[in-house]
Image (cartoon, rainbow, N blue to C red):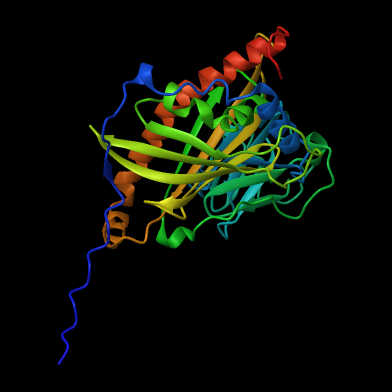
Length: 341
């Protein structure tokens, strides 16, 4: 009788770095991060269609008992949940005397203006017209045709993501003095990762990249394929392969295709807010992380999702503290005519 050999334990996705180099001795990437290449990828992204959809914010932040206010490209909008729990979005000024509806309460699915008690249930009333909305379960979207100026689409251009029911999902929101183009350009430059974020990334190599030329709006040969290791503790790292794409003009998506967390997605969305008091543009960064894994321990990790979600959000916030500085600097140089873009 032939005995069945014992099953092999799956190889750990983690590695101990050998002969690790210090930050200043790592291979320079400035020759690879060609301004023309980044600019060409940005132009192709900007030429794609959004259907006039803008990310409003974290879907969980829009509740049935409170209003959620945001400004998009200088336009005040207000959002809440109606009596059925559906997303309702409309102009942020009360049609009566212009009160800020973002400060008004919600009762039984009805937004009640705190100035004079005018009630809005999400349907048109007195010149107040609701906007088309879309809730993808993680992010809330609003369609603003007067701002977008494109041919409207019935729904946003959504990237593929793992099912939310089996994932750990978190949304980070930040704000910077720059334009959406600067946020997108930041994400289309993975070469800065190990230099600018040494606390998170090491051993970064761009395996494949799009051409510097190509018709605007094209998706052919437009993926950045990156091999990189996430730092965990000391010399312990998690090597992965990540693919960066820009499905629409204000979104860059990173799909992890190999290594720990294969199938996970990081979506970076840039929503224009409008000028500040000094006339400078402001942009909101809404970054959604949808983490998944086929490993046995991931199911146990999902049980403590409420605990992990703030940690994931904090990690994104640390990265964006630096990346918003990058985007803001890019805007400053560009407006002075010093940027290659």
